Image 1 (tube, one colour):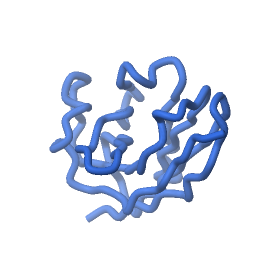
Image 2 (cartoon, helix red, strand yellow):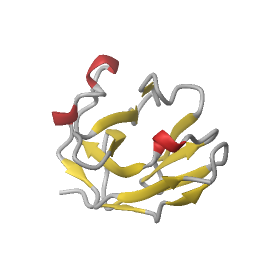
Image 3 (cartoon, helix red, strand yellow):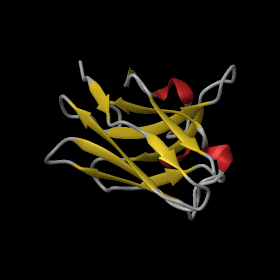
Image 4 (spheres, one colour):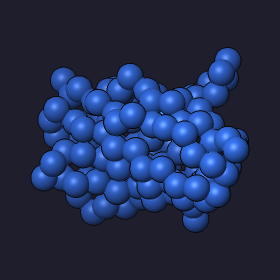
Length: 124
């Protein structure tokens, strides 16, 4: 069992930056960030594998968001730059013991552990 604890999200202006972190209580192989809008399904944001550090991003965040991890600290990060109002959502950290291939990293049902979620608001 892996427990995930996300840092507080926050408020940023359009064009601004925020960094999320997620502390895991144990080892996880593939880790990811998903986000959810009110009354919508959760959507994939980014994922990273433990061993080789391979990453996958949703098209909507490519070039703006960077996912990274510190395997010693068992911590996952999401650096969000050039934020847009449409990035406003609840962000969830998720993890699995599996080392997913790149094409599988975005699957919503591919992760058995998730955090409580943290609100990110982008508004002027």
